[in-house]
Picture 1: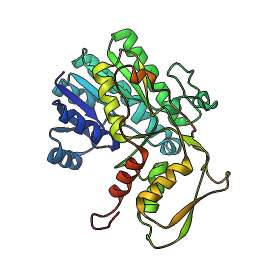
Picture 2: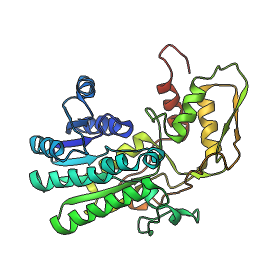
Picture 3: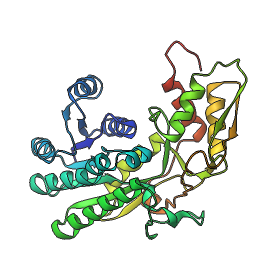
Length: 315
């Protein structure tokens, strides 16, 4: 396997995937949103192409010109609350995008290996027991984001059954580390504490502090995508998860410690903000193909805080 096309290559997880692919000797072509991002990406990582995954013609041209040996599809809406507020755009960037990528591969390079990024949000009520969720759990999504990812997975199943594409699906859980979007649940909290005056004592109110989350360092998540690409089984689904949980409060306190701020966190009234999902993923399938997490939440928290601060501001 030589050439890998990565959609969403300039994103939170995409950058780490690209770095690890390059480190392992792969030739990488990054799919990015626009020309400005293309130029920025090429200065750091190498070849890039503008790829709007919601545009079937654009995607078809990119795949046809690249003829990759593998495709890691990471592009599309990644924030559940934004999918809820703009479901049509989310549909285009998730469901339509999967169909566009799969059909482009079918037409141009049908033997390519494909890894598709779904989400733990497809599980929904299947995670209500609090026990680690296996990939064979019956999905019961409760959010538009989870429903859209599940619809995209259904399309992937059609392309596997009818066109025999060599595809696998990844379901990532909570990922933490450098570049986490500040519009995400923990990204928003990290942005607050990163800007806090270290000498100022205060309290931040934050929701769902007792809710438990399965958290993984972004470098481990990227390594999981590569492992699925090289060793995953066709039409298989893999949880990308740590297999353990921390409470939201514990994760917030790790971010506070990393920031050095004199601040504490307290719970908001439960009716002020929608509850976050309390999922824990069983990662035995991923471990079965040779992957294991290497990072830690404290290190990932520190990386995130550093990425949010100006270079001149100490951590």
